[in-house]
Picture 1: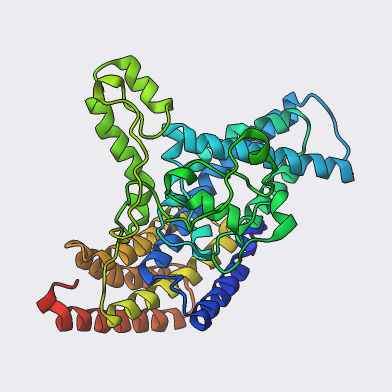
Picture 2 (picture 1 turned 90 degrees about the vertical axis):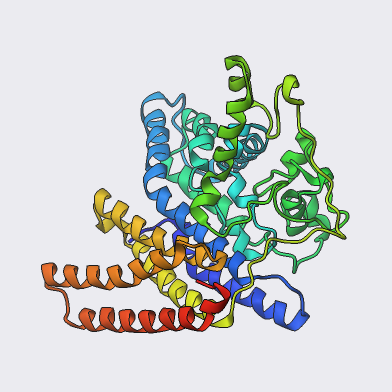
Length: 409
């Protein structure tokens, strides 16, 4: 059983998202769009899957430093836990701030900011690569003698705290705003308005932003997203899109030194010969339009059906990931990734999406049948696989036949 607090909290996340959807219905606010919410969840899924491999690397280095190089031997008590909480939150602030101010690091964090909505599903929109650039900010905590398990627990709780602040349903919170990070503060952080860019990097405590000059109160309603919208629901592309843009920029930069500077300067930087730092564009509220891919209801229902099954299977896998070998984990992660990619590109009406989906809805039941045969699993799984294949084939064929004249899937 996976005892990661974030994985254990998955049911709570979806209960709270359900409550927010009810609030949306009764307040008549447009808080959610289906493709966006699914893209957010898909990025969360790919982040958890990659975390099975990358977080072992990060925690492993922390453990080596704690075990062999710690300066102090500390005894856990109330002061120990308080100091650990403050150090974890401070390390998070600087890791988060540098993820906005260093181009290379921004590529590992930009995923979280790509949504043009602001709701609880955005909290789950996490990068698969951010840990590569940010784990080192916490390593001094190991040298101070704070146990690896304790560090991992407080870090997870710090992450969990930030879930509830991704909402527009909670306004300003009075005195609480002076010390803690809140929905109002974090809405600013997700705004693409020039005055809101690179502000409010806090995890749990807003005091760090107030101390280090990055605080901005919420004034006008933010416009959410990044300055150059990704315009895609594909979670894999979401994770690599910034690096694709960086590769194009690097080809344009003539000198090796400027190429190195480009990696560590702020996002948008170019050498003076190419125009210098690109300014954050103002957003014209009158003409601004969110990325949208209208789809027929039949396709929406089909994607939701496939996605609910994927969520259930992924949660089951994450809860029991320790029972699988590294190779098995990688194989299952690849199977899940194909589902979430297909869910996004079906909304985008990509030419190759229908072929990828036909392959998946036939290959997955066939794979299940093969595993049942080789491992002597319950014969009922043959029935489950057959029923899934029949429903999916019939439904997807019906969508293609009904909407072929308008080029939908």
